[in-house]
Image (cartoon, rainbow, N blue to C red; front, side, top):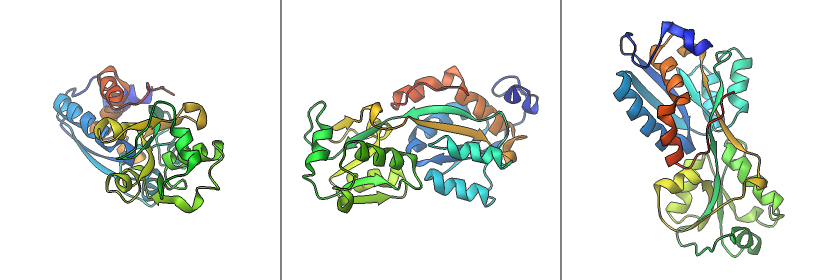
Amino acid sequence: MFLAAAAGLTAFGGEAAAARATVAVAGNFVIPARALKERFQAATGHEIRFINGSTGGLFAQIVQGAPVDIFLAADRARPQMLVEQGLGVAGSRFTYAVGRLVLWGRKLRIRHGDGAAILRAGGFTRLAIANPKLAPYGAAAQAVLRRLGVLAALSDKLVYGQNIAQTFQFVATGNAPLGLVALSQMKQHKTGRFWTVPARLHDPIRQDAVLLRRGRDNAAAVEFIQFLRGAAARPVFKSFGYASQTAQ
């Protein structure tokens, strides 16, 4: 209801003058966000600028006053916390994507379904995961290892990225032979094989967006939130391996 009434907007582009919005984007969603940005800017004339990092790191910057209009997080908790703290606009939070986790290695020789066996065997030197304290994909990776009963056994082999993008780079550069990364990243980099982690091994990675107080009167920010919820954005989400959005 808020979004329909905000700034008197009726459709993308409307009659409002072109505006600019700054969007904080979780590391796993940077490439899809760029694709969405191109479609949105072409349709509206508005300008979108991104800053990216771990969900925890971006949250801390927003709380400390970073000039951000929208937060595209990789979890649900931090956008909700921003609403509770009065930094997010009530009624604007929703789940824009549901992510999936994969086990990936550039030289990984994996057959369908044997990713769990690889992790249990532990025949590798390092396993990269995102920092579970900062990145929801890291928390999901930690949950997978715990549920497979290998977290303690692999503790000395774990290397931590500050976000899922850095975790991916650890594997891409060979600093770690294996990593638990986002399926969306594999849609972009078709190098090596991967095992899609069964959803039952971790809680759903529901990624929420929230319009921030700074952006509530910004036409570009309000319309970009509308765009993310609309039919025009859905093919982009699907092409990058995200499950259907769930409006809240």
